[in-house]
Amino acid sequence: MNGGRVRSALLALGLALLAAIGLWLAMPGEGAEPAGWMTPAFLATLVLAGWSVQRTAALDGQRWLGTATAALFGLWVLFFWQIGVTLYQVPRVLLPAPSFILQALVDRWDVLAGDFVQTVLKAVLIGWALGSGLGFAVGVAIDRAPFLQRGLLPIASLTSTVPLVAVAPIAVMWFGFEWPSKAAVVVLMTFFPMLVSTLAGLQAAGRLERELMQTYAASYGRALLDLRLPAAMPFIFSALKVNATLALIGAIVAEFFGSPTVGLGFRISTEAARMNMALVWGAIVVAAVTGSVAYALLVQLERRIAFWHPSVRAAA
Amino acid sequence: MTTDAVRWHQKVLPVAVVLAGVAVLWYVAAVGLNAAGAIERVLAPKGAYTTGDLISTTLNMQRPVLPAPHQVATDLWSSMVDWPLDSPRNLLYHVAVTAESTLVGFVLGTLLGMALAAAIVHSRTLDRALLPWIVASQTVPVLAIAPIVLVILGSLGFSGVAPKATIAMYLCFFPVTVAMVQGLRAPQRIETELMHTYAASRNQAFWMLRLPSALPFLFPSLRVAIAAGLVGAMVAELPTGAQAGLGARLLTGSYYGNTVAIWSALVMSALLGLALTAAVAGVEKLVLRRRPR
Image (cartoon, rainbow over all chains, first blue to last red; front, top):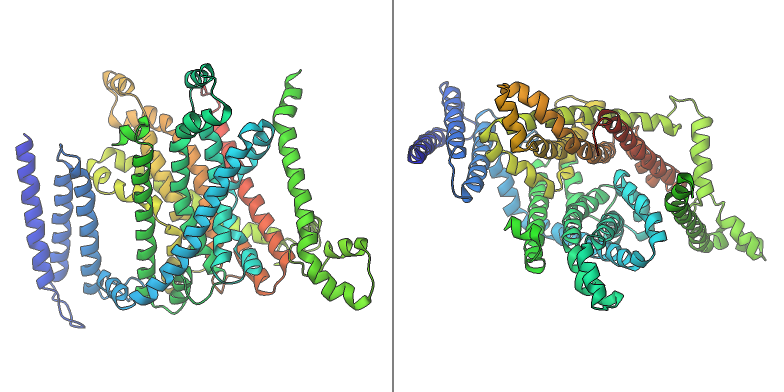
């Protein structure tokens, strides 16, 4: 039965691929009117592509099939974006073709690399490390002060509902246009999630394990290092992952409020005002790839450090 | 101890102490940060001054580096009382503008997210092809495409609430979709099999089993979504052209170096965020009131 499914998926994929190649070869040159039969051909290829995704999604078995289906879908979206935008001559201001975005990425890579260094390596990385580190340090420091915990925790939880990034204009006034003002915004945004997670994580060790530590006559510090901090690791890593995205958002949005003439947020806002959309999309691709890579790296790090934890073992 | 006394000692007192500590620190920081400017601009030209003069000057400056809490409170209050509600000098007017686009975007984004989640749960193709992308989008700063949305909608002739609400909408959409898919899949096998033995149709199973069991997943994501939508609406107000809204207010404040106005707008946006989240939490309590915890 599965063999039949595989055969029909392969058939659908082959037909869709043939249609796509045909469509690609039949594309009119720059500025030329497309032939009248192009629209039906476009729609027919669209249907075939949809069918190929549906047949691939129906396959059971290996885990990589899920990733493959999503990747196939993404590739088809890119393909029809490219073909559709060129075929119907969508203005570049509205939606540049993926090839133009790629072109902008290649041609202006020196500009984008400068923006990446300015925003990611300076503001985001330093702000993220400082904010997360401070949140962790404060969380551990007030571990033995339940009064302070009960006072800080409700306030720290409420900050997630407050648009903290709006402190950007104040940060610019205090720390200037350069990256320290962006890092300051990032510190503020990442501090509270880490504080909340650290406090929650330190409570995560089970009662049985704590009592075992007590029977060993382990000091507070020993129990913290050997039991409670390791047990807090999944909480800390989830805060690090959330903070990575928050830090990128914070730095980019803070640059909308005022920045030197370099930086991803600056690039996005000024090039959008100049209608140079290919470069705007290029900057967004850089930001998106940075976010995904940072997340993937943190997941890898968690697997290395908290490999023993049930939540990590279940995921692997 | 009575339960009220316990509540007081366990919850209210610690928070009050921490808040009081923050206020004290704020005043100390205001004196420290403003001292240099106060001496240079106000006190030194007049000659000799006492420490008392210095402190009272630093806390009541025109353009302080850090305004004191009472200055922000006075500015907030006078802006709400001294001007009519439809005047751009009244902060409540800006709150209304921002809240409107946030709420419109929030409602649309939530409906869209719930509809897509229902489709994903019923379609294996969408589940495998689309859901991974939506989940992955949570690691990406999607707010960064806000300027693009503004340019596209602007060149299509949309203005006013529509572009801002669109940005708030797509920011709300992602967390709601992910949580809703999780929630719709939450029913245990035994419960779905019970529906099966009742010969319930897919439709009935959706409305009677899946949707109710998705609600505890939905509401936390709604709180995340409305906070994200507020940030989106405020960011959408930044580019030149937006005359109204808390985001525009922040930008004009920083443009003219009016620190008290920036802080007032900041406090106001924090209050708006808290109010919107409280509203969602209120609805949650109302809807889930019969559920055992």
